[in-house]
Length: 499
Image 1 (cartoon, rainbow, N blue to C red):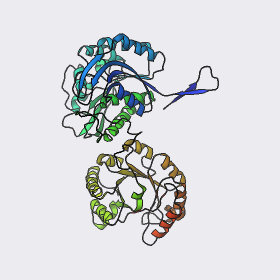
Image 2 (tube, rainbow, N blue to C red):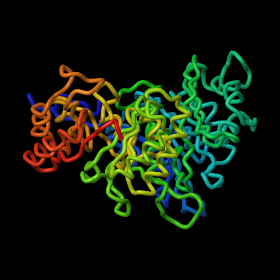
Image 3 (cartoon, rainbow, N blue to C red):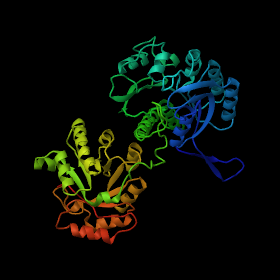
Image 4 (cartoon, rainbow, N blue to C red):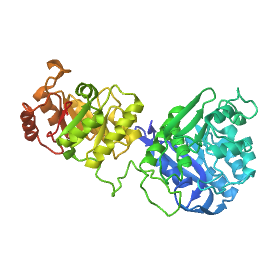
């Protein structure tokens, strides 16, 4: 539901289209890491139109907030009426609301111009710890705005402030306070009716190795886990998360889907911002538009030359030969492999992560990319160079959304149609095969040289021949690749399980 089509007034037979629309009501951040600026960038990244009502001006940068100047509530009211009366807003998202008067005029306008959803991010303190709104706004939030909210997204400090200073140090603390059946007096959800949604951002939970958010939908609790990214560039994460939720709701997604998509986006943005350097202070902004823009200082994401000799480790073969995954990877690189794929179907996740980290050390010392077969979670957790996916695995387009633009994605294809779809989904290369019979793939499961030729001719991506290739038949595969060279097509690599 990325766009809406309807009939244009006065132009019979002609249609027009509009983008889903989020209105953000928040403060301006002169450093553009948080506030209105972050909201607009987040909505843009989600493919949604974003208008704005500015409630305060701040002088702030990566060091902190130097000054806050509230906008007159009459001017806030005029901005609200101007947008809501004309521009068909789907979702209102709120951020910094500096006074009870601003909250009152906001609530009046929401009641006069109903929207699909209201997302409240109760911004009170900046990432650097600076106070952005006084205690007088708490009553307005609790009594007037929260009853209109469809979801509230406090961080630990904000949730604590809404609860009168109660300490939140563990997941159990959060669950206890959100659940009206466990704590009838202090439940956060009870402040604005139990059936509403609450997302407590637990990124600052002490003694946690993960970034854990707790989502309560009025009935069930959902613990949303993500890796804790080691970066200074975290300024604006809360504003961005709430805005992305608003954008997904504007597109028609359910609340849980919107929350999950927003968390995935923020994590990907943090991952792509680890080496970003803007400003001299301790809290830098992160890169909202990482999907639209490559960073010139990064090494090229993918080079077809990586496929010249493609080696795959296989757990069954490694066990047969009495060697570990890392020993197999080391042997393949010594033998001339230019890219390595870890294919592990038997190991537990923890064991696989440990082995992958060992293999990454080996590969990066030699400048050889390391891919993970199928397991996007392992690739993401270990920061591997990419993944290789089969036709029954996650679609390449979704994998690209999760992994971001800098990772390598390969897709196994047997037909011209599959090859064309892999290109359209944003894959980097295609693995075609098995070409020749193997112990696991007999003649009826192979594509043969003619099938390989068909995929090569249809593909706009480099093609790697897979399966049964050895010193006796590799020449025929090489000749086929050279004969069918066109555009980005390259069929000089081969994949084997006996590295």
